[in-house]
Image 1 (spheres, rainbow, N blue to C red):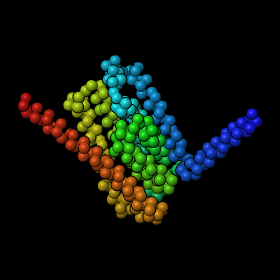
Image 2 (cartoon, helix red, strand yellow):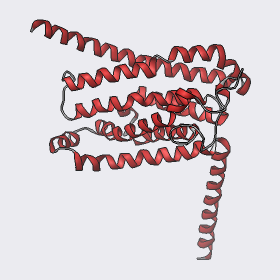
Image 3 (cartoon, rainbow, N blue to C red):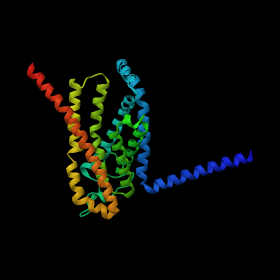
Image 4 (cartoon, one colour):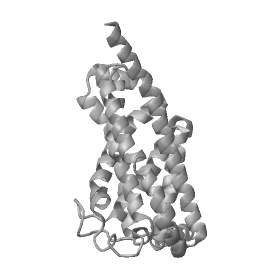
Length: 299
């Protein structure tokens, strides 16, 4: 009995020590504000995912509920991802709006210094709509992406391009938070989530039984297409220009050539994914618009 008690005490003690070591490593490697956001984003994701079926059962019509219940496991995962996706997107837009359009006080107006090597790691700040620092919202972003991968029944169900996007973004944001660089660009990419609620509205309409050719779906698709292009594709040439002529050398001096090259790869992956998705939308949208014009001429 004494031996088993001692063994139990040793295992408990070892577990506590391991937790302390991991906690110390996490907080030493990343800003505290980023970690707070990561934990909050992860908890928020699974909370919203838990609430999604409850809200559906309470507020949705019986026909809508039947359609949801008839979805296979992959489509069910995507449906119940809509609520956390929408909440997260709205949070990111509210949290990063001020940084994207007005900058960070005392961090973005330093003459001769690239703003991407100045990192505001405070939890509470004097600017923005919420007074919560940009590092917190970056942590929320990573927590959301990681939780979305964990919640998927399989990588195939999630979609391999989305898996690539999520993993690349997670690694990039953690790398930048650890090295305390690239905060303005991270906030810009997080603000890109402005297009996400519009995509989710379209998906809700399709789940409700509307066809892609129906007017309400066509309008939501067109608005989503325009906003996606404005916030995700239009800024890319300017981001790439600043990266080549201003930021790359500053980042190279701050964290080394290997780090600058690695970030260049991350940006290339993001640009290819965004442009690829935009081209796919163009391919789907053009036939839809041309068919409607043909129908009008026939009438």
